[in-house]
Image (tube, rainbow, N blue to C red; front, side):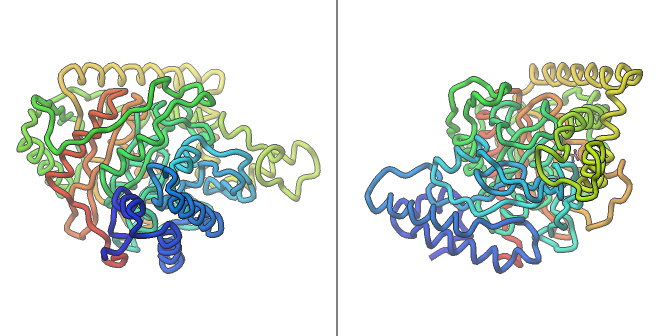
Length: 485
Ligand code: GLN
């Protein structure tokens, strides 16, 4: 029999439904893998052993009684540690919340549980989702399963590494400026960022509320589609949740006849030659599938890093104001007055990157500077949205790489600006609220994975997934890293 970790989520679910494996066997199998590999990999921050075993036992009973089971029955899933699981700790990768027990479940988590997923644990991440390498986690780094010396990407580095190392077959991530697509690309798995508002943010610890989206990491596009069918539902607890009926994602390996794909050639500067070659190959694949490739003018995207790091920090500075030492998480033991409770708790609780962003965000919002920074950035954001709208009048999807190169080594990027520039190809989708996907597109000469990014117009998640599926089926670059086979 194929080892369970070589299967996709859909395959493992079908195996369970046919009665060829029990949920208890699946849960035990993946818990064993976590035990074997996680100490060095660092992908999971907490493992919910007793909880998942209880769920598995009740699922097996349900199947024995021939009751209907959910669409994710028996699928082992990991949750990024900024999303609430009822009564479990949500650290957000921060010392600040190291003791914070969630009093309710995130809608997305709840929807996964309702479909009988087996939730294994919570994954490591950059503190409050701020970072591109997982090096900002208060609980230590995550290794890239393809090369322990390299970063897995961030901020959802633990989720990407968990799926790449097959310590789970689906993981949730959040994408504010690329935190699903970039780590997916660095770890050689599929990462999907839905249209803004498609998945409810209720129960997600907010970073940049106008940018944040929850989405899945998977090993195949079909699994990402399944995860979206489950998680992409309207939720009355999130005012920005799209009030639309849930969608189904039919997939065919052929492109819709007449598909036009736009490439913003002038924007694609700074690619390493290997990343460029990889991208050119992907375009050829799409041409062979019958797509017409056109040039689109998205020159304005050169401002997106500046715009993003103004708006995201502004929103973060207000969102993180709630961590005051009184309502959530830790409280400084050294505080002698109310003022000191605020000051010392924030000083002791937040890491360096988070403090930097709170200060930057407070600055761009301060009176006197607000017009020059925050309001100006909002105006440029509108121009970016307009540019995408114009581009999508001439094409069905836009293709670009996810990053300028494959994963870098731990500690290799010290300059914060260089780190922020990592997000050059990913932040535009967040600024415009677009759906985007990272699909494995091959490997560089060091054997490190690269990803192809495809973006679609707002609300066109289903059509976008279809294009990604056609590309995946024509290429299939999916592999399991040697150390985790
Ligand atoms: N790397 C980006 C940042 O540091 C994106 C993070 C994210 O999407 N959560 O802000």
